[in-house]
Image (cartoon, rainbow, N blue to C red; front, top):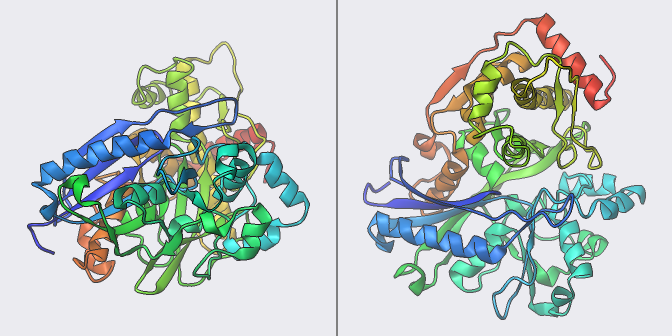
Length: 490
């Protein structure tokens, strides 16, 4: 890889948009970041302004291109994104027709329940690897068509896409694509197919004409408009955020697993070239496709992780900063019997209870905000423990779990996860592996590396957390957790 070239990554998260400039050696040279507005029209509904995502991303990208020394210094652009969020726009004007429906949104619970009651879930899981849940994109698209007259009236002018599709459309002036990892999160794309499934499109009521072309994870997809950055720049890498983080963690071999702790928490285990079919409520998904070879992953999706701490900070005023959660957790020897169930957007894997609601149990006069903050952090390890059992039952048990994402910088939390799992955990020195994975894909797509193994120099070094909790303490915590979520004891 030429030392003169850089990789530019657009990292589209749930709460912010960031653009990161990487050197040829994989070093972070500069970052530009802007917050995204969160809209909560009513309980269970979460929305973004797609125009705001675009405008703030473009502003950050222009700053980073200038920092690089101009567009000629950029070998390729990688895009990684919050996955199941749906944008609907007018192909003619290029403007969104309604707010984006965010992956956390639960408004289509009734539609998904009706399809499940009609017996469709088994066939959907067999084809797509996914379960019937409002989390995924198809029911969101159908809701827009039923409830936004402006969208339904567009006919063939209507375009649907996840956030990477939206940004590529805007960057190129009309290229409508989605990579296989994002397509595999819609409930419309078969794990072993190359394009959208007609039967699933009909089942959900989503017209194929509105959907993007599905492309691999790396390649010469298109070029930005000349006036965007002063000269065209190639777009060469695309991946959903959790797949990108798996690649950024160096989980290139079958059986290697990572857990990203961001707004939610997402565990992916590389399953090789065989499509996985879980019998324990996990998800089969596409990890990436390179040179015609598709690699799969088994995924456990937790809807609320960092968002719980944000909620304690912003909505309840219990924390002055997110970092204070670690300080409070360390200030008490245990949670004093307090158990936090983080079902602020229902419960995801392995429970899949969209109707579940968050709770705090075990409160006494002895409980303080420190105990509640600690219990909130402890809940992540509890969910991970239940996920570990599901993975093992599916024949994909973990030997090591690699942690990343902003929340994993909390040393207390990383150690607690290792303790409750009874498993060695590793954390890279650069915990923002989502963007790093997109950079690896973009570098491969720009022909700077021939394959993943050649790009291993981009993978960050790691810190190690070995388990230090006794069986009795671990057992007591898990008994209290199971009681709080209504699960029987072992």
